[in-house]
Length: 624
Image 1 (cartoon, rainbow, N blue to C red):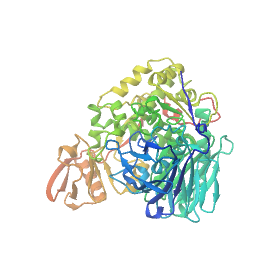
Image 2 (image 1 turned 135 degrees about the vertical axis):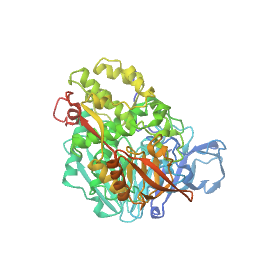
Image 3 (image 1 turned 180 degrees about the vertical axis):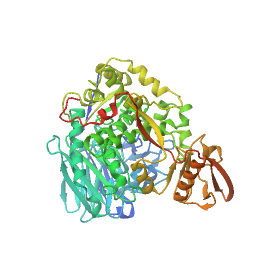
Image 4 (image 1 turned 90 degrees about the horizontal axis):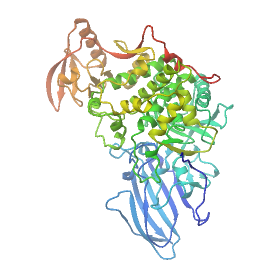
């Protein structure tokens, strides 16, 4: 039996008057401070308030409690003492006085990174702010977010405009008042605001309606090209063709652009039922390096509205924001969406079929060189978001978040396998329609699933041992990645000395050098070793993350000097001679570099049908 949980507005039994009010003041966001006042309906006696800990979509306890400050509780004008739970840092105990019916709460959220903390702490600049509601919310411990009703409002700085998936808004001067919603829907509906703002409709022929909403630090960063605008339209059309129905009343792509959010031309985000929350670098729309990021990034969060928000693994379907998540199916939640992002991007025209193959090659090379896969399987990696990570060094040995790219490779394999079994008459498109689309449009709701229901849905498309196929991949400790989707799709992972155009642009954008596939070394532009591949030539030579290369072959270090030295080493089948500094001590190391720079791409396999090209074709208006 499939159970659906809806976001329908059902007011509590005590009536509409008993609603929590949340007033947020963004006036000080230029100082990275968000003020909030809450008015919570209460009864006299002891009670516990909780701060959201497990934020939906983060797959881990990332609620930024360390950024909460200035917490003052009062009732009827008198301050009330509170105490934090000694074992649960997200819980606050308080005793409500007799006859008090409303608890008044004041708090501040300090929008700074705490210990390399979560994205919500990086959402304010001089000219814009992203309000993620979990950072300013306290609610009664016993309340169920799907039933607990709140009435939110936001005070904006002068001349600022805003966008959100929240409905029923009215504005008086700088204050925007929204209609009552469940706490669940509020937390699922971020708000962006800024002085420089742009909003426009896309794909007007598609119902429900879709909009692009952009805030930026600079007005020129709001501008999109005609090609991008056309691709926005096609993205919605292609997603509609893929899933056949929608599970939202409207959809807003909420895009916030600032150099503070991204130090290179890239985009990232968080998914919601009726909107995205995409943060990108300030020049993302006009930078050549950002071309693939725009399409693949926006498509990823959009696809999550179906995969992750509407259909959700049963382990991530929990009653509140304090209950731990079982994330063992993240390779579906995130992995399949990682595959669908580039797929929808190429079908929409954001990117080209060659871009699509290059993305596949990048995933394949990353995962095929993850030495940590020999001790840690995909299921364990799928739970890794919950494991504190002290840094990024030795990433190939530690693994972590590989359920994104490796999960994508698994689903590419599923797509190709379905096409092979059915002689290309069916594909993953059919699975997406039946599993995520269902029969008709609905409002936002959650329909959880189990692994058994997932494999049953695949068997309904084409009978096969899908449970065995998927179990082998999620439990495998093979030293090599699952590349059957690439090989059976008519291509082979290969390496050349020349990077793809996108790789070259990204290296220029970041200023570093990715030599992971040649000698196992990643470098910053100042010579700092940012990572070393476990078991690589660089590792064997004694290099490690955090060291600093001073010179290469007797010349002062620079990225051009390093690349030239690698070229000469390949021609002579020789070594690189590097002078390395480590905690103030210098030494010389020899690193074999017989092939020079090596970058992944896909090479066509003679005699095997090219299914990757078929997969990349648009499907809107076809029967694919």
